[in-house]
Figure: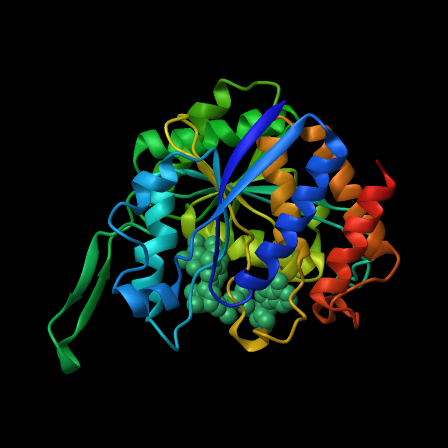
Length: 353
Ligand code: NAD
Ligand code: IPM
Ligand code: MN
């Protein structure tokens, strides 16, 4: 019997709506699986927590979370209560950094029954491997002077270790898929970091002669995500490029509400964290219409992470059968609620037992 201790952090906004839904689904997964059980412990870290305690999590928050096998997070951010930079540096980015979740894996594919905005989308199935700890998201920089003289400085940091690490991850992943890695670059010499990125990409690719490669400038690549996403298998991207690309990937799937993600700790020292691509969706909070599929597909990525790929595939098949049959939340053209979609998924999962 595999017993997984999961820390759940619903966080803010629709995180509090989709995390409980996905946990109900995971509980059903363990009921029908037999050999797998979850012990969930919920942590209330959020912007509301901040208002009460003056910080996004307590001082021993990291110590407590460290004991878990994984973290299952909804979304962080409620700018009406706490400025985003405070809530994000205080919780989301803090967890990614302190727990060395240096890789962010974000798949996008044609999802049965979900209408892509592309007129005639060929079947696509791609994964963006996003560097998750440095690059354009470095903490080096700040604001100096004031008024007319004010200057904002952001230093992007690309270490050889971090760049190689994300590229190796992408190549290893491609080896299990269609053996193609695309590097998202901007190497026309304007941005200093990118010729370096290209060099490392070339060096790493020599160790994987069986994998085909290409490099695309990020602007052209973003356009290809819209005009021809089926040409891609695995795309390796820096932190900011990967962030933008994965919202485009989500959009061409049909909605950011279905896009999953995994923040992976590769050295085994700390828990990995599973949180969808979307945020707290302030415009739909409390309406009961948040799409739970992003969070549920993210749960499937957590199952995969623990070697439970078989039941993970069953879960995704069941979710796709539900969308295929038109049981959809409004963001993907339906009229169903978060609860209706979740209940249907649970009912069909039980029928598979
Ligand atoms: P967002 O992803 O929250 O919302 C963008 C649009 O997508 C909105 O129209 C929203 O209604 C819709 N949407 C998102 N998820 C949906 C779902 N599951 N079902 C249906 N529709 C959905 O992005 P934003 O508006 O840029 O950010 C809002 C807040 O969330 C900000 O505070 C931001 O910093 C934060 N944020 C957090 C994370 C995270 O915690 N991982 C990710 C992105 C944004
Ligand atoms: C994401 C989000 C975060 C990011 C924000 C909220 C800091 O957009 O997870 O994609 O940029 O990584
Ligand atoms: Mn993003």
